[in-house]
Length: 214
Ligand SMILES: C[S@@+](CC[C@H](N)C(=O)[O-])C[C@H]1O[C@@H](n2cnc3c(N)ncnc32)[C@H](O)[C@@H]1O
Image 1: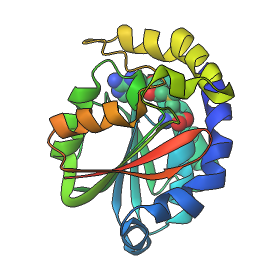
Image 2: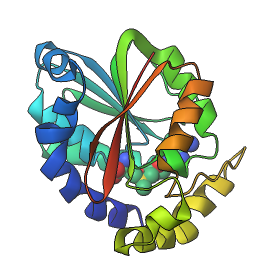
Image 3: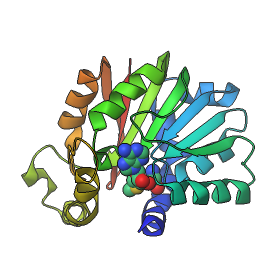
Image 4: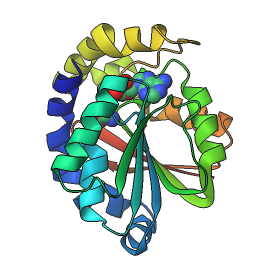
């Protein structure tokens, strides 16, 4: 299942992350080029972490996930890609990942899987620099069921029912945002956690990229 997630998402990240999504965020590429500290939360096998570490050799990347076997694989992927010096990985939940003062915090296709996304958002608010950016990549979803009655929405409701919603329900709080959280729900959540700015920075047929700032 974890390998399947990596194989499903990695091509989309390879096609969009450094060429379109990061450049869509205000001032982030400049910081990454000169040397930023980045936390990639819920990193799974590290597909996103490795792509960013390859593109921005002056920055440091700290990936974390609460699934220990995924963290082991992420380390292997970073070593194989030759970025093990600047991409490090550890087992941690999104509600208490280590570190502070991050210029960029990223979450790729994982906020909606978390049992306590509000707890995670509050932890990001504590850990991010005052001029930092939180990039949340989520499945492309409208705010209403009828907005998702299309081929991508049908596939994602399937994932949601079999994977994302049970994953969230298995954790404390069990918020169950599901795959189809939509921008309105995510905006409400980050405002509750103390962020003041929220913007849909980019979209593809499969993903929405949210820029969230203190
Ligand atoms: C669909 S996978 C995405 C993985 C990776 N970000 C990617 O895009 O390939 C969701 C990930 O969220 C992680 N996850 C779920 N709940 C978590 C939590 N509370 N804290 C940290 N990681 C969590 C899972 O272990 C899994 O690796």
